[in-house]
Structures are given as structure tokens and as C-alpha cells.
Length: 159
Image (cartoon, rainbow, N blue to C red; front, side, top):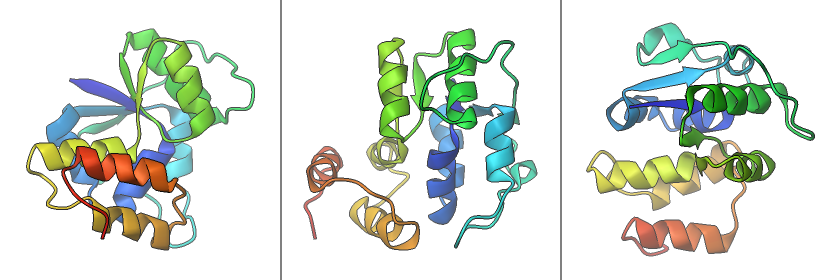
């Protein structure tokens, strides 16, 4: 199974040193050029991502990039590529982009969804400490209600 990804889920998994979690879950992760460019730049506390070290990540250009108001180039290219490929799921975290993906018939999966899947498949032991790391290291913003739901789905309680 392949999946298209935007930048933020990959960055978050990179921060957690869990990028390899995607391979057993999806086999192949496609990213458009704008996402590759974003990942190639260092961010505060996050070095550039060398995708050559991850054979399951492939850069693929969409034939036509749709313009989506209020979305960045990476989000627009990722959604365009997913549409082109007929993907039913898309790795994306930003609320506005998730809304667009849902409107277009896709199921958006964020980094928290990946962590839940990892826990369900026995690839991640606990989700709660990973959420805490994201909040501390990259100012990952998520409501208490969403955290509670994620932990419920992961079979955990809030620490």
C-alpha cells in the first residue's frame, strides 16, 4: 500500500526517531517536490531530512497542481498527487488541509493517527510520551480533547 504525505507528519516522526514506522504501515510513502524541498531545510531543533536514507520514501511530481486557497505549496502538491493517484488516505496534519482532503473524499491521517496504528500493530509501546515529546520539542499543538481521544484509541490513559 502506498500513501502520499505532506511535510508535517514526516517532520514529527523524524523528531521522534520513528520515521521507519511508516514502512511497515504503508510500504511506500510518496512526497511531492514541494514537500521534499521543505524537508531538505533545517527547522529549529530538526535537521534536514535525508530521504536517501529511507528507501520507502519516493519523490513524485503531480502532473497538475491544483490551487487550494490558504494552503501552502507542500499541502497543495500532496493533495493534488493523492487525487491523481486515487489515494483514499493522505498523511497530513494541518486542520485546513485536512478539511480540504476530507471534502475531496480522502481520509486524512495525521502523525497521531500513525502513532495509533503503530501501537495497534505492536510497533509503538506507548503513545502518551510521544505526544508529550512532540509538544515539548516542536510545539506540536493539539487540543486536550484530541489527546484524550487518541489515548482512548491507543488504549491508554492520560498520565
